[in-house]
Amino acid sequence: MNKVYCYSRCTTCKKALKWLDDNKISYDEIDIKEKNPDEKTLRKLHKKSGLPLRKFFNTSGKLYKEMELSKKLNDMSEDEMFKLLASDGMLVKRPILITEEKVLTGFKEEDWKEACGIKE
Image 1 (cartoon, rainbow, N blue to C red):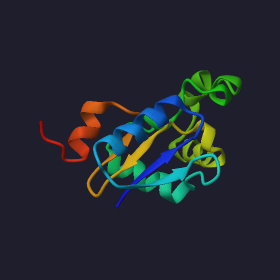
Image 2: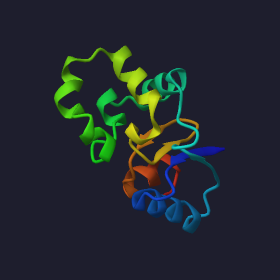
Image 3: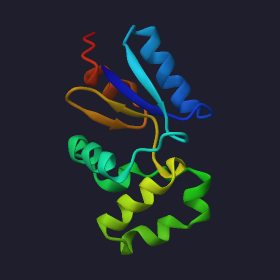
Image 4: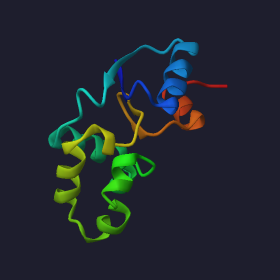
């Protein structure tokens, strides 16, 4: 079963969930604010995604900007970054799509089509 970490007030998340529904793709929705992934989960998702760890940060978020993380991430170790991401769901880029084979951050329809096995 696919899983999607989302935030209910995020317009990109709403768009992604509508896309999943329109394409009749089943998923479990996880509220990232209520159930932020812990450090162990984030490490697994990061490894499975093949993405740079920075791609897991919600760079357009209020908290990211308030904490001035764009200036601080370069000096942080991966361990520090994982701890920070695990501390607050609002720091984590969303939506996060988790399929059997892939983990994607953010919503790009073409990437999601491929991850969900939709052929045109």
